[in-house]
Length: 281
Image (tube, rainbow, N blue to C red):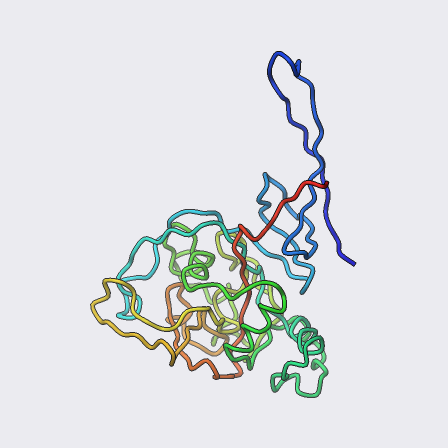
């Protein structure tokens, strides 16, 4: 059954004929035929929504410019401005529980950790790993979403102030799951709330590498031009067994699309213009 969230808003209409009458409008929020509930409502673009197809929370990243890239590494050069329209991105990495439901619904092949069709006890809310790019893409399409672009991922991770880690410019090993952590494994998504990005997006440093949509190629104006289109896709964010230099918000990690490493996961995104607000007929 579709679920929708209804709310009433009032608006004062001015003019001689309307005599300051109030007219109540009831709006029904619908997304691509999938119900959502509004978790925070400020205007027609709520700051957070729940996407019922995969029971995920999505965060609004507002339109505007941000600084992408850095002058640290050739693959990240040059630092440049990018404008992005509004979009939503999953607050958390896709979990084992969510991915198993997708596989059961579609018959998609299971990753090694879930090969028995059962999630190991206690790992229901860990990020799914052992995922290739095509697996991630298939899940996003099933959910009615898509993979984020590199630019979308980076803006969601660093905001508009050009920070080097989601939480700021200084390294803090206690704000993400990294190689100095005691677990030597993934942890449940959202385990480091103080390490959230400026928008409240979780685990954008460490835990699992995250596939993005783009092929690996140099940025415009890079001193070293390269283009691995058709060969290498990009992952972002580092993973639990990687150094701090690969957990930077700007770090790019190229992999063949069929790489199903135990470190590879993902999250989904959707353009805000796909979030439709329709008045009932």
